[in-house]
Every structure is written in structure tokens, then in C-alpha cells.
Length: 300
Image (cartoon, rainbow, N blue to C red; front, side, top):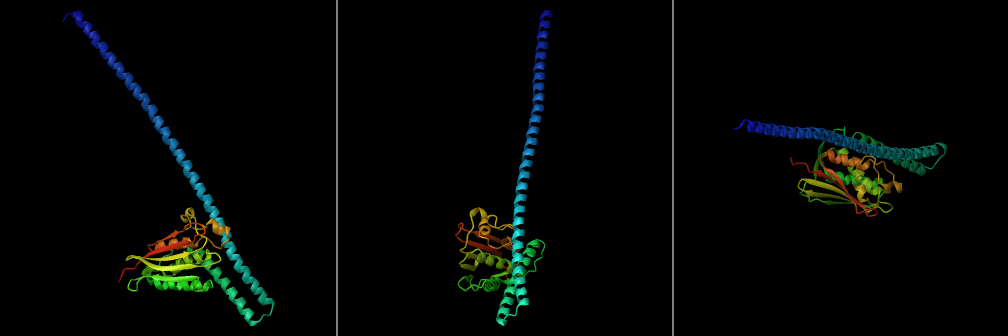
């Protein structure tokens, strides 16, 4: 190769190498710069999403706290009224008995009213205490005949609310050979049954027509179903009625007495016994159906 040609080739080789090196440098620089910008962009997006997420969570928390405070205030007002009414009644009758001489039959009538008001106070206090200890109380489980338990609850509700037999009916859809025994706490289950039945009676309005059914769903589950023809529940409210302190707007508007704890207690008792409770309604004015399912106790 001629020295001049070799030098020209070397120049072109060096020039080509320099151009390649420059292209690589430019590409690397572009990548580095854009990588940093990309990192900043990604970090900015992440921080932005975290801030937005925090604001959303904070708003949800505040809304829940506002609702909880409203429900708590409604509960306090309801309980205060529920406590004040029987206490005022008892005081009035006691003052009457103290100041006036009354016939024996009238005195017995007053005593009966005061005893009823006392039972009402005790029921309310028991409801509040039961709701407060719903998660801490240990179950004293034993094998229970649900037939007897439901039948006794129906009879007690009929006497307590002074209802005729046709206003509160009870039907068993369980074959004689099929067991209806459950493992559970008798006091807890009685409280749940009582709340379901009392709730149906209370929200039935002027005409009480409540049906209580005991039925076997399958070999492993038995259910107590309470159906009324009262004020009904809207679809949106069905998801909320088992919350603590919650009362449907229709009940508040109609000034139906209650603390908002009954259905919460029913749901809590059902869960602790391995069961569940559900509610159905076609809407306001169409009545409601509550079903509590419990597992059947294994045969010994």
C-alpha cells in the first residue's frame, strides 16, 4: 500500500471511529438525560398518586366518622327517650299511689303498668350491655333444641305485646325425624330470636301479621325465618340495617321506638354461632323477611 493511501485510509478510519464515538456519546447522553427526566416523571406521578390516595382515604374516613357520629347521636337521643319515658311513667304512678287512696283493682293496674315499664327498662339496658360485650363475651355452648327455643320466643313475644294467636303465628317445616339441634349459648340465641320477632312486630304498623318459620335448609343447616307485612326496607338500606346504631329513615320518620342495636345483636350472635343472617324486602310498604341460618349440631 502506498504511504499516502495508507495515511488517507487511516484518516478515514479515525474519522469514522470519531463519528461512531460521537454518535455513541450523543445517544448515551440522550439516554442519561431522558432517564433522569423519566425517573423524575415516574417519581412525580407516584407522589401525586400517593397524595391523591391519601386525600381520598382521608375523605372516606371523615365521611365515615360523620356518619358514625350522626348514628351515635341518634342512638343517644333514642336511648335517652327510651329511658326517660318509662322512668317518667313509673314516677307518675308512684306519686299517684303516694298521694291518693285508690281501690285495690286500680292499685293492681298501676303495679302492672310499672312492672311493664320496669321490664322495658331492663330490656333496653340488656340490649346496650349485650351490644357492648358482643365481641368479648365467651359462649357457654350446649346442645339446644331449636324447636323449643323458637316456640318459647314466639310465646313470650305474644304475651309481651298482648297479641292474639292470629297476629303472630309459628310453623315448623322440619320433619319429626330430622334433628333441629344446634350447639350454642341459650341466652344469646334467645336474645337473637327475641330481637328478630320484636323487630317484625314493631315495624308492622297498626296491623300486626308476623309469621315465624323453622325450616331445614339442608342436612347441615337449619333456619329461622321471620316475615312481616310492615313498612318494608329499600334496596339500599338492606346492606346497612345490621350495622350498630343504624335505623332506616322510614322508622325515624314514623317515630318508631328503637335503639338501632337489635339487628346488630342478631348478626353478631349468628356469626359467633357459625351462621349468618340476611334480610329481604321488595321495598317500602312491602314487608320484610329476616332469615337466620345456624349449623345443625353433629349427632353424638
